[in-house]
Image (cartoon, rainbow, N blue to C red):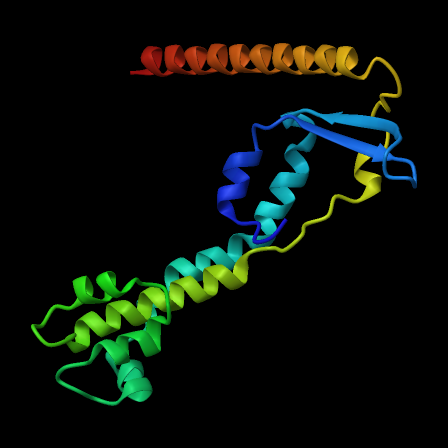
Length: 188
């Protein structure tokens, strides 16, 4: 998988995982493993933490860019052209979007170009912050049940068990929240 980023964390944190392990012929299933969201959670969180700082940089560093850097890159101008904007932002915008971004009849003001430069900086940092092809080490699965027969039936059982545990966890969390609310009400 390419470009593992925050959107994958959101997508994967509640997924049920199925891993198939095949014989060398690539056709014969030796066994499979089931990973509930709870079982896979630590791995997903580990990957999230790995990319977190870089994505925070992508959110905060662009605001540190000021007009002096723009002038250093493109020279000081009263009006910047579409070509100047494309030099900064590459092919991130369509031709229509480049025209829509103009804030002057014939181009871009220095402040608008600064916004475009900041957006590009954010994009470049975020793009470089993704994790390519995150592997799950075999040791992660140590102690997991190897499903070697009745695959579909056993997987259904494991998913049902995981969903039941998740529902119980949610019920306990709701009860704890209610208890906390009662304590707060009593205190006030």
